Image (cartoon, rainbow, N blue to C red; front, side, top):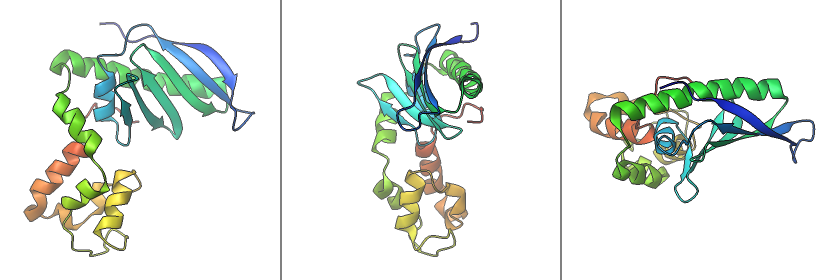
Length: 184
């Protein structure tokens, strides 16, 4: 399958920062097969099944990818930055299509489980020692920061111990169930 083609179709001034632009682009094909894959592969992404979309940040910029192939980039300083972000996104889309060809659609139960992941669910699977080695006051504040992407599971030293391997594996799978081998 040939690589996904993406073309910029609209540039509008950013309402929050007038010197920046918002960019709308269009892929040359439907992205409906890979939107759920992107959601499961990109940490801290949000999935809206009703809209057929996934939103996430790419190099600090908000990106929305729709099943229809429409792509929205948040406020960027110029078109050249938008083009670089779209090139990076293009590599991600190609990897997602490659994953789809090899593995098919993700299990709907995995999507539901990822959507239910929240600080309380994360906390249930942490050691609950409140050791503070992660730099937080306890395991629950760590769970909150892990859920919103301010911390990584690797920062919890206790969960790295063999006796917590089941919980560690569960959290790794829920935080990023699919690995696409692309840096975002």
